[in-house]
Amino acid sequence: TTLFRSFGTVDELNATVGMARLHCVGGPAPIAALDVILARVQNELFNLGSMLATRPEDLHPRQPVITAAHSAQLEQEIDHFNQHLPELRSFVLPGGGAAAAHLHLARTVCRRAERLVVTLVRDEPVSPEAVRYLNRLSDAFFVFSRWAVHAIGEPEVLWEAVLP
Image 1: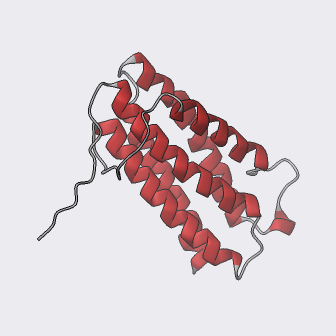
Image 2 (image 1 turned 180 degrees about the horizontal axis):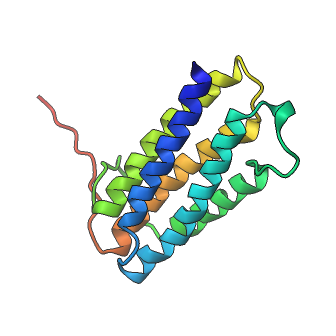
């Protein structure tokens, strides 16, 4: 069902973030600092999966849930990391180093999770914060991936139209 695919994909996303973290720890200091954010995101994703797996009326009062504050935190981080990036004038291709490539993978898995949760909302009571959080998180992964490339001094891999 869409419910199981939704929280299963959130779990897959969490594992993907774990892979990205492997390439942040022990890297240059700026990249290592990103690991702190990704560790928090992994915990938030676990809370999101738990939230999706529990009917709203069955939520325990102390069960961690995703709130507007989580999305607002991501917005602040997007703004912070984006201010250090050059203006984007082309599409970015995944790559530019292991951390950036894994963050791009996390972005795509996050988008899939978002699509599934949007579909789930049609049939199940789901907090709108779940969808909002996944939407902001996928944007954050995009900005984090661009930032990671620049932090290690690699050029961004930009799309070039291939004409016949």
